[in-house]
Image (cartoon, rainbow, N blue to C red; front, side, top):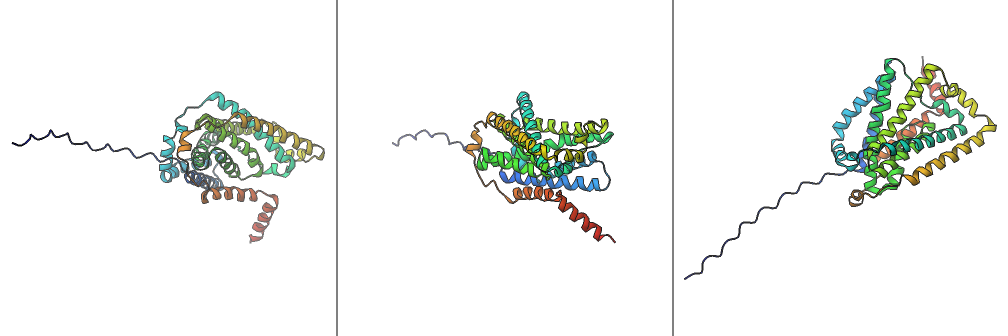
Length: 329
């Protein structure tokens, strides 16, 4: 007599499929997005301005073009950013306002230091001026939409990707340098560098990209609004007329003390901001560190800005003007 069959155990269930992890933001994504943003923005707005379109409308058109290009070329990177904690963390308005005040003071001190040493550079500082209905388009584009896109590219994709590749410190320095140089005017680069560093540090300190968006919007809106006010009311002649400002700053008796004072003041403000906005530990960065942070696109951003800066030098502008006059029949 045979033994009864042993009770059969229930069949093992198939292991549940684990969802594929979301790809994090890569450094190369940020580098490429920043370069694409600069090229599209300058080409689209430059072509429209050359054809007689007003500044506000031209910038707004460049924003639309950048959104379309970004959704077409950078959808995986943008999807990774949306899933990142930086995008999902709400802003801290008090922190953003305090950082803006310090960044504004350090930025203006840096500009004053630079134009004191190089008075002729005041003539090349861009003036975002418009009037009528186009002023409202300029406020919308330059004051709100362009800062948002630049924060997505530089502090969202580039900074986050560089953090994962090389850590907090290098990410803050590299993204700030690229953002400042990309503006292409020496005096603007000097002033934007402290602001860019503040934007990077406040994002690392708070864990929220939205704080940088708030600060950037306040800075640009204030610049556009003051430009419109000075133009309409004809106030602050030295500010509205860079030529008069350069005459004032070229006074030999004022140059050294003014430059030294502005450098000391800006340096102290920047140091206070650096010590205050310390990066908070981020397990996601430590767990997923990867490289490299440097790519051809990052070099392209820097070269783009350096070439634009060279074009603003008086000697180069004179040479180009002479060449164009010689080429005319």
